[in-house]
Image 1 (cartoon, rainbow, N blue to C red):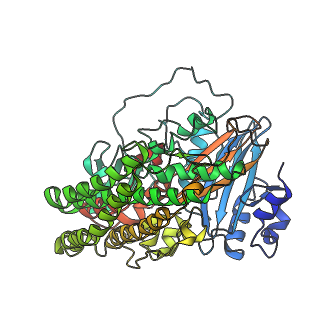
Image 2: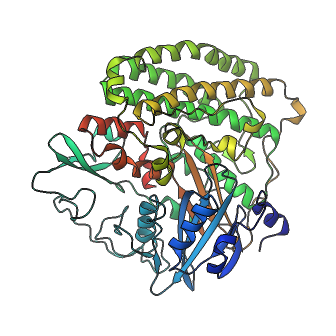
Length: 551
């Protein structure tokens, strides 16, 4: 049951009932820890969501969570406002357990297409009027739905190795007499992971793109549901981003679980978290920068190796701090696992030396990339993603900010120590591949600015107040049926976690909202009508990491 304080927090900032415009559709009210929630009939999904979007300003469908109870199935549409993400609501759509059918939200929010396909794939909920309701992570021949309660995990599976065939007529890659189907990937260096693109060509022109995902699906959500809050879940988030952004992913889980268990983080630990998270962002962005040079202008010996060298400087600092080079496992519920490395003065000196040399090195990257005429020809005015289209697909992070949308959860839904520091949100209004590259390069500068301020604070922190962890119980058992959705600004964008507790020390439902999942869904919008080289440039500009797409 929710406390009065939790209800007050969920309604904070709302001058009126956020559901007043759909009061005639509501069958029951709920309170999630992050937002008020309302239940509606399964045949009223489009009417409710379109009204909330149009009249109440909830224009960001951040996530769709599907789950099954003993007596029903349920879809939760987590809505936020791009103008103010602290304004959020949850629309809960129950469906009959024996015949779980619900109306699709895709006509209202384009991003619901993939989210509902995943819900169908893993839980078994069917969405009427969905334009393409088929499995998305598992093969079409898969038997059962892995997150449903009656799933037989020991049952045999039938996964055929049939020859790849064109998509069904009517989809985005429907073939015609004058078109050719081109397979890009799943093992191709330009796909940045195990990703398969089915591309329909009319001569040199791209007339359709169908991203085919799921090759490395491990059901990380089910793995998290099998682990305890306190000790066994935290190592998993690092696996969602092997590009270096793991500390940001750890923070996503920590934020959700800490708010769920009402854990207050010591201020000193918040500063350390903020510093380490920005190092992690630099690791991710520098890999994106180097790989993009390799994709677009074939520059391995200069830009790619320069970027890897830059990452190595950061890697050594993060390794000193966390003890790991990639799977950091540094955050703990309540803080971090240990304090800064000793001697502290030597650590601070190393960090400052890195920060002092970064501006000069970034100028070199601009000389190699943004001032490179060949790269400009390949990226300026290609992969165009207008701001309203970017919002419709639920894109976030540098992809959204490269379309001129000023949205960053570090500032707009503050956590950690960000709201105490001086830094800027970077946006570019070119809406193209070049703009997304510029955003990442400038965000490296802002990360360095944040790190420098954190070092100043940590240097002067009184020794007797260096508390790295809150007093967290050994076993956490949040109240039964307590629900929360929390998100952070990860390297690729908004990384959200939904948790439903059932009174035990393990989550009853653990849902991961990977930013790359929604970002990748926008690729056909960016690439259709352009050429194959433009498609490769557009895909690289998304900086997709398949660990958080497939999960």
